Length: 246
Length: 169
Image (cartoon, rainbow over all chains, first blue to last red; front, top):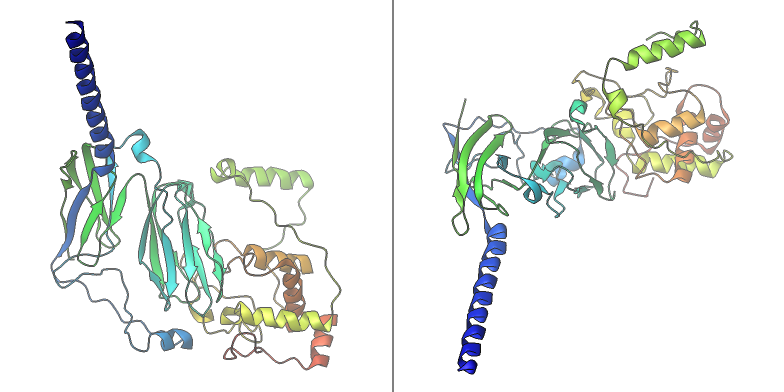
């Protein structure tokens, strides 16, 4: 009799422990698995992006001999997808979820243009500026110092080592090169998980704990739009955006 | 901006305090770490030649021009941080240096850059010893008679060649 009771007790405890572990596992996975996906499109004809005359720097002309570089303020694909749109969570994040991402995004100067055109990052996240060009650049972000972000301006001659920096406050910061006046890009500094749309206008924001959020989409010409979204374990939030061409 | 050297010390202190009250930045931001300027070495022909190599390597000529005449290929499109046209410094016409005219002042300005302008910091790209070489070369571009100018003339130094491959000036 006693043995059966002991066995039953043992089995009960074992089952409870296993269930508990499964539940805990699910909770941990859910915190990592949550995501928000979507597509950002442009409604209407994309504005014409001017071709760039790089003749002031023969190196830039040479490395672009087989391409025709254009301004990149609005980059829309054939299906109307908008590239370089930054998506981030503007409401609903709290505590640990808002800790800065730990990867090091890279902003490269290549063939006398910025790649990517928009570099998204968290407040406090280290990022790198590199140069792949054999002509001197200077990297000159121009934040509004009232935000707490201090402007800086560093040269990067050929062969220069990467510049590593971070920002103190959320802000969309314009970046330019004074030597090559057509070079223009952005550091999009946000809080919490973020994503940037690809050439088809698609994005996925990872590492979003289950919850209710407001997602903001930012495009440098068209500004911002917001949407409310709910993320659950195994059920990503979905938010599509459409900006209207002016 | 004229000079106001007629102020008393107290007037100057009072004025500084008043100017600082215009922006919270003076309260919220700490000053940066001052750069260390090593002791100035003797001017030598080798140093002036090395300074000319630095001028070519980090491509000062893109804005300042190969003779320092402020006519480099990027000079005409330069803008300050407010989007207004701005000229690079012209080493050849005797204009006043913005941040002081000693050798150490020149050293400091290209190592820190000049806020609000296109002039970047070269601190990550020019070693302290090379920086003195560049100062001496820059002096040789200026109109005032100097040891550097005389030496450069003796050496028959030509302006840098923007098209020369790296390290082959």
